[in-house]
Image (tube, rainbow, N blue to C red; front, side, top):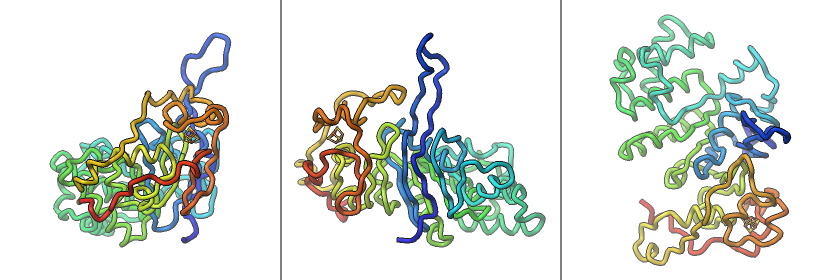
Length: 339
Ligand code: SF4
């Protein structure tokens, strides 16, 4: 494994609520609450979990698009927290974001060529004929015709617009992309094409991805490692294959148990771990293990003592007091059987 390009330690993003009680302290939403992870060079780390678990806020805070309340973010050996002005802009050039909705991330009044050219100008990387040539190269790289430069975003399909947004993101030659559910707004028929594009670009330009997703089938294709989030915290990190074959944390197991098996025999014998209750509010998370209100295996200790994320078998890190008792998930899923 290479030296990490990105190292995040004890990241917290707390948003104060507007109104509190008259006497008590102002309540806060603990959107991200003590998250640590590494992303290695050329690697794709997928961040998965239910909607509202803090995945997107973690991605935005890693790029300093949302200010962290606490923690350390190191990029290529340099601390990002505390950077301001020109030094922050220079660091940001190497870290870009691809958003879920490509239409909202593109100015509808700006031609595609101008949209891709804009970051080149802002960062002083190219102008004039050199910038025009670079726009052509970028359109080639994302599989769009060069003539697209003269058209407007609304003239393209959702998948093509995401390609334009990707061309704009890689225009400044970043090393690291945070991809925030970049295919979930696209038609299923084009999702695989855009996933393939991300993979091609990673190989070609040596890109490193933090890939935020809730669709585990997508994660299976693109991720090298996976971090599973629940209520603002990472509860397990593991390899892509182990996500399907050997999850250790009860929450990870429940996510995997919800994935339909393509093999009808396996599908009939699939054991679902059904979680009861709603996800608690991040403004008032449960004491102890945050998952204890929904965990089918919770015991007394879980209600009072928070389990730290610690190294576990198979290179996993897991935050559960009883992972050794619970063992790996059964039955494993045969990845070759998946479409
Ligand atoms: Fe479940 Fe307890 Fe493990 Fe939390 S620590 S995941 S409540 S068994």
